[in-house]
Length: 435
Ligand code: SF4
Ligand code: SF4
Image 1: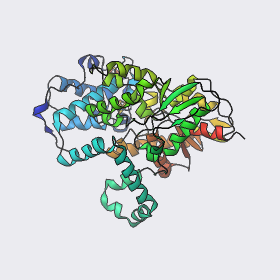
Image 2: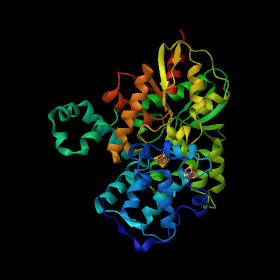
Image 3: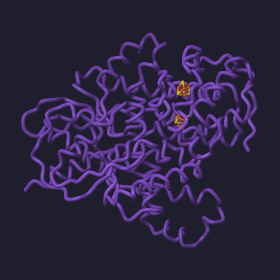
Image 4: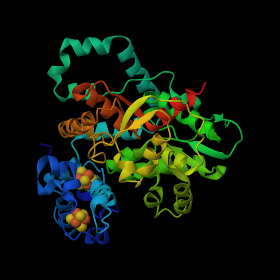
């Protein structure tokens, strides 16, 4: 169990759950059944209501105990409770603020601090370091070293590292970084000018998905710019309580895009989109950026949301498959987008759609949650795969790269060789199938 030191120097944190947000909770418990960690553990302190109760205690002066940190960190920030809550509790905002307060008021052990600094300050925001990490992972995978390590049994001796290694994404070459700064013309008449955000890790793990997204947008009359100055969206930073670091990234993304008169700014990652659409909250106290952040948010669209809002190019060939759809939490609960991906899938000729039970219950991916809380993530994944298998669909479709990785791991462990794809990859197949 981790032991955290209270950081006395930094009390009075600026980011902390707001009393007005806490007061909205009437403790009715209607959110409990929507909460994956409560469904798994049946512990009040690992339910939304229990976590809010603990936040209230801290707001009233209780110290930040180790147990508080653990209950808050075990939350997936999936926001399923937010959808279920009849009182409009903004739970996502509360848990992000609680994590920010924890970050400001406690001191983590040295090793954790160094690791977090490396990942959040030197890796995710740096294109050079991301490229280096992608190349290193590629060498590990392509040289045969990964196979050797996996069959040698050495990972069994390294505890959780085995599980984490199994979740490592497959590197895709060439990386999407090479498209930064490029402008892709619309197919046919140009109807829209859009900017596309390629993400951070997605540049080397989902390079083909990013290319498919650009192609589908082009096929729908979009001139697609991949702005050179873009960077990581900061979603992982926000989830980890590092709001100042997220603010720095938000300003960079706003500067890279806001003055170029785009009709929309597009992401294919629901987890990123949810944070990108909240840049206005993140920067509300920044007099130089508050207005620019508001304009940025007004343009921000998930790719499924954008495509469902325009007249979709119907020139699609058949995709003969039965698919089921997993709602990405940050699309369904964070952005309240449920029908757009389903509508798009239903437009694809030849495709059969089968709804799965509990499609909006978290699969356990949740950013880097599956790495930090592997046991809980895997328990949730097993249940998710039961729902998937019950549909007998041959393909699982979702709207977030993190969910794709998690579901691929689910197929390996509990599946029936299902293929896992993003909604835009299905559309791309359909457009490419036209003779
Ligand atoms: S968060 Fe909402 S649903 Fe849950 S206990 Fe509070 S008021 Fe009820
Ligand atoms: S965000 Fe998800 S895991 Fe966290 S309390 Fe709400 S439903 Fe439970």
